[in-house]
Amino acid sequence: MKAYVIGAGGWGTAFARLLATNRHPVTLWVRNPVQAREIDRLRENRKYLPGVPLPKKGLNITSSLSEASRAELIIVAVPSFAMGELLDKLVPFVEEQTAFINLAKGIDPTTEKPMSELIRNKIGAEAVFTLSGPSHAEEVGRDMPTAVVLAGADLSLGEEIQHFLSSSRFRVYLTDDIRGVELCATVKNIIALASGVSDGLGFGDNSRGALISRGLAEMVRFGRVFGARQETFFGLSGLGDLVATCTSKHSRNRFAGQQLGMGIPVDEILAKTDKVVEGVYATEIVHSIARSRGIEMPITDGVWRLLRKEVSPSALVDEIMARPPKREGIR
Image (tube, rainbow, N blue to C red; front, side, top):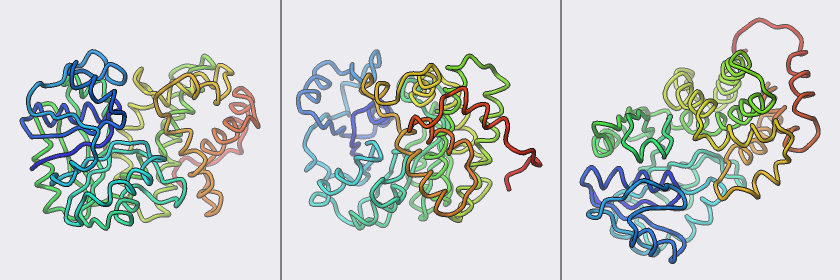
């Protein structure tokens, strides 16, 4: 199976390296031709995945989307807000029978649709999967043990792709709850921002544990409205990725939240990084959807107001802690 990875950020690069290391022929598409030549020459992505050597054989580097026409499996690893534009450019080079895997963790800001639906609508592809879970590129690129979940409606093809992706250090589980997996991937980044705010304020493990558990309740409430299965939120794409994103030194969402907690404005935070902080974009979309559908999401609402500078980090904590007492649970 010939694979084509679109997006040479840290995750796209690590994923292409994973396939090449497993001796699968793979092409990595790099948007910037200058960067593509540099990665090809150095066999390293020094901008987004420094210190991780890339295989000299089996991994082709290109800046031409037309090469996607030769792929049987296309893996898309671009930010959620850039997905629509990328797919428009990709349309002339792919067939409807081409299988897709989405690696982006977000919702399209224009249509408010998850990435799999956007791919189906733009490309016309039927075999669309999403892969998610606790999978920081820095660790996957260094062959640290990782487990993820592949979600899609076609479980027969899913099993084939599951075996194709799996290795001794990369374990892939399979589910047909693609909606649940995609919503987990989106909302957990918002909770990670909140966890970072707690860290920035100098709080400890108690606060983080509370945010993770109550954040998980928000994720379940949000997903249930869209028909997602509750057990998905307690699996790798839900609780697993939530814990990793809220605690890891690699988490850009937690780090951005930490800076917010220290009083740094969001526009300044984003201006100082060349990496995408998906949680910032997800907050606006998820908050809008939750408000229109009457879904109770106090942490998400608090992060939204913090990003809009309507409340200070310390005042936000006081507000959340002063909410009326209630029974523990998801409802």
